[in-house]
Structures are given as structure tokens and as C-alpha cells.
Length: 581
Image (cartoon, rainbow, N blue to C red; front, side, top):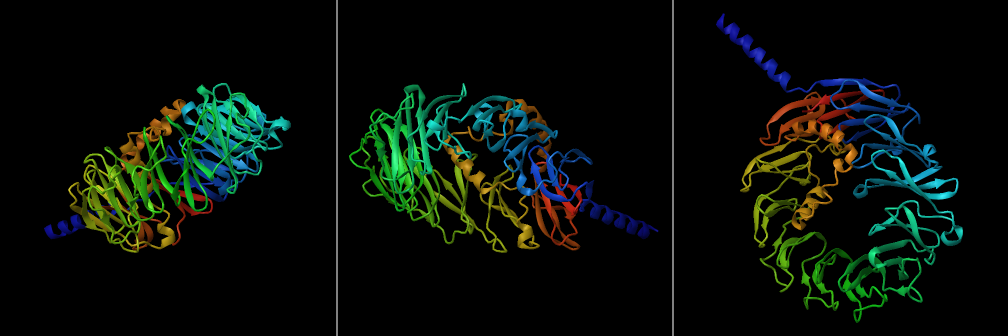
């Protein structure tokens, strides 16, 4: 009797344990049309383009929240989502309709704003505006709209053929010091951002020259425009009335890649097919100040301007800095690091941290020496960097090795990395429990002393499938960006997030409050006993918590990583969701 009871208890326990390890379908959505495209939008929304229109599904809900069928079939190329804004842009030919994707309400249509076409849409978070380049009954136009309401606040028409020509560049505009600049067939138009009125029109640019740079100091009436077709390059100095102040454009050594004001004048960084050039120009006369341009071999990977010097790292593996007063290099011999920089960060006391494809180190820009002997990588497969603010150091993965690097140049090798299936680390995430280093199939957690806590690996079901998912990942770009922001103390770009548009901050904040439960898990695509699926792992322990079976050899799905939902295309008219929290 007792043995029988114990057996029943063991069976019940095993059954309960198995149930806990399987993630069931949480909801099913039957759609009217065939599924054409799936896009996850910030705030817990899945947008589904079908042969009938657009359907929106909210995370962890069991019914769709709206259908928008005004445009009919939505193809994958016809739907885009504006970064950090709750807007979906639906494009049909030269027409664009903008929806609030939380509600499905049209917030912009060309017809309601007297526009015949919209070619490009550009958000301006600092001023809470959205700009659109398009056309109306008068010709090409440029509109400004309130970011929160999409109400039209102004429209500029480029109808003066005599000064502007027959067309404008409808793909982009240039911005500098409170002014917007639109390229026309004949030249360029300067628009004041505050009043959204034309300040001046300049009509003496070569219409066939495609490369343009613009820099303004409006308070002092300084406007500079460079143009180039690679073979010929010119600098135009323009006054507040739109007139060139020199008898003819100033000829340049090469195409301008960067323009910046310094206390010594206007600094231009130029490049031809082989070399880079630096030259300083007088802001009043546009005459060159340095005796001759500084010529640097190869292209430039990065430049950093200080009060008195201009630091550069060339892609040929050369580091030096220019004296802004003379154009002379600070070091007689450039610091030779080896080619192909991956990261360059200016530290305190004229120290420079760099990573190339072969080595890394910290160089002294005053002496030209290394603070410590550079570390040579035994093999670099994918270089990623992140800054460990807690310990004031860099964490560097070469793909085959992991290092801690302090600001004095001391590099400590923590461990060798040998990810299976020819994978290489693509993410570095700092957690309370340690530092997570991982890729799609393999993840390693180490503590802050460099001791390995765990390593997990799950075989990929196939390269094409594994490439679709990267849950819990801190991408390489974001990791590298965070390093630069931390070291420069500049968080302006980082703060331009979903809450940047003040009128929508509350809605975004409410939606994102639901995401905190997903940050502690990893999901890895692999082959389970019954087919392709996902395993759910605890990031801090590596423990396998659950499985999700998709029952499809080539599953089509999208994942809302922040809200912990997987949407699986079960058939051509049905989507099922899985709760990953």
C-alpha cells in the first residue's frame, strides 16, 4: 500500500515537473487575410500585414485590438515603424499614411494635408517635430508637423524655378545651428527651424555634384557649403542674405568628409581615393590658414577634437594628433598600431584606448609610447567591447579570448573562448550576478573576478533558423556605443528614447513597465525531441527552465523580446502566441 502511494506520488511529481517545463500556446488569432508580413513594434504590439490590410495584436492579450483595411493588402516593403515613436508608416507608391499603431487611428494622410506625395519622413526629437519632403499642387514641398499630434505647422513650396530649378533632393535635408538646408537643382535653400520660413536661397552649386556638407554659425552670420563630384571639390562661404562672399568658390584638395568650427577657424577633413587631408580656413575670408594641408595616408576611422588638438586614427593603423594652430602633427612619428581599428576612445591625460583587428592597447599621445605592451590577439573573429562602469575598466572579446583592460593599460586575460558551430560572442551584458558573454547557441557567465559560473550550449537546428532569434542580447553596436557614451560622459543620444516625445511618454512608460519580468531569461532555438523549438534559460544560473515546441521544420515567427512573447505563424491565416515570461 505504502509503495503504491509512493509510486503514485512520484508519477504525479514527474507529471507536474514535465508540465512546468513545457510552454503552451497562450492565444490563437484567426485572420481574415493571408499573412504577408510580421513586425514587432515597441510597446508590446505585433503588426501583421495581410492580404486584407493591417491587424494589431497586443502582448499577452487573446484578441486582436484593431484591423485597418483602408489600403488593402500590405506587403513587407510597404510597412515601417518609426524609431522611438508609436507610428507605423504605410507606403503605397509615393503616398504614405501614418497610423498610431496602439490605436490604428490615422494621424497623417497626404490628402488631409494638401500633399500629393510624401517621399521621406524625418523625426526631430529635440524640437518635437516631424519633417516630410514631398509634393503638392505647386510642386515640391517641405512640411513640418507636431510630433505628438501630426498637425501641420507649416509648409514650404519650392516653386521658384528661376532660383531653385526644377527639382529638389527629396530624400534628405541638412541641419546646422537651428537651420535646415534643402538641396535644389541649382543650389541650396536655408530654412529657419523656429519660424519655418526661408531665410535665403543660393543658386550657384553644380547640379551634378552629389556630395554636400553644410555648417552654420547663424548668430555670427557664417554659412559654409562644400560640394564635390570626387574629381572636383569646392567650398562656398555664404552670407545671411544668401550671397557668396568670395569672388569664386574656394577649390579644395578633395571631397569633404567633415567640417567643424574651432577657435582657430573652420577645419575641414577631406579625402580622395587614397589619402586624407586636413586644412584650416579663415571663417571671415575662407582663405586657408595653415601653410599647406596635412596629408595622412589612407582613410580616417575616427577623429576626436579637443580644445587645442585634433586626434585622428587612420584605417592604415596610424594614430596622431594635429595642433589646431599650425596643422603640425604632435608626434614626429605616428603611433603604429596595425590596420583596421574597431574602437578608439580618448581617456584622461592624453591617453587613447584602441582596438584593432590584431591587437589592443593604451597609447600616450604626448610621448607616442604605449602605457603597457599592447596585447596581441591569437585570433580575432569578432571584436566587441563594453565598459564595466562598476570596476572602471573595459571588457573585450576577440571572439577567441576575453580580457579585462584597466585605464592604465593593464590587460588581464580572463579565459579562452571556444564557441561551438563556428559561433563567436556577439553580446556582453553586465548583471548583478556577473558578466554574460554570449551568442545564439552558447552563453557564458563569469563573475566580476573573472571566474566562470556556467557555460550553456544548445545545438542549432539549422543556420537559417538560428539566425532569426537573439533573445536577451545586448547587440554589438549598442555595446560599443555605450562605451563611447560612458567614457565621454555624453548621454544625450542615449536619452532620446521612447519617452522623448513628451505627449506619448506616459503611454510608452505604461507599456514598458511590463517588460521587467523578461530581463532574467535567455531563449535559445534548438532541436527538441519532438521538433524545432526554444529552451528557456535562467541568465544567472544557466538552468533550463522550460521548453517551447513549435512543431515546424522551418518555423516563421517574431519575438517581442522585451515583453516576453513569441508569435508563431501556424498557417497562412493563423498566428499563435507563447508567453515567455
